Image (tube, rainbow, N blue to C red):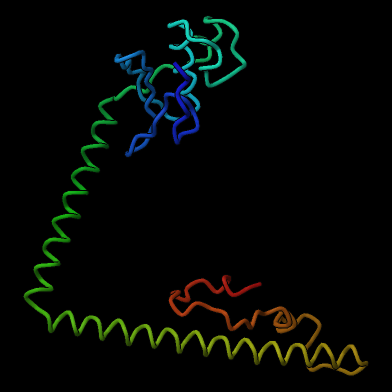
Length: 198
């Protein structure tokens, strides 16, 4: 029988769980032997190799080539992740949050169906906010251009042997390095001024 191909996790016999962790299992004919859930794919693959050694599988069906004996494979295999009371409580909390979010979506859909005028008002409000934010970003960009032009003109004046009205410690000298790029995204919220730096 040809060796099984490796799964999307990159290891033979290891699958990623939808809610975190990696599940390891080994198959022998119609038999599927669960090896447990692990925190990383590497740990799950080590557990797979230990089980493969116990079942007498050939080395070409292993995930790692650095193991030469069953004892080495057992030493390197981690214990399976335990589902503690805390794990179950976290899972239950996530399930409750999911149910609340689904109920919120259902109620909001019903509200939108019953109150189309409020939906139209809300869309109008957010459109005007978007326009205002865009206008404010453009004004900031124009102000940066003016400040940069002034600082660069003063630097050119000093380089040509003239005298600037900026003092040596004037922070406006730093305006020479302001970005005045026009390629800002109109969909961003404008909260992060550092995103405009080259």
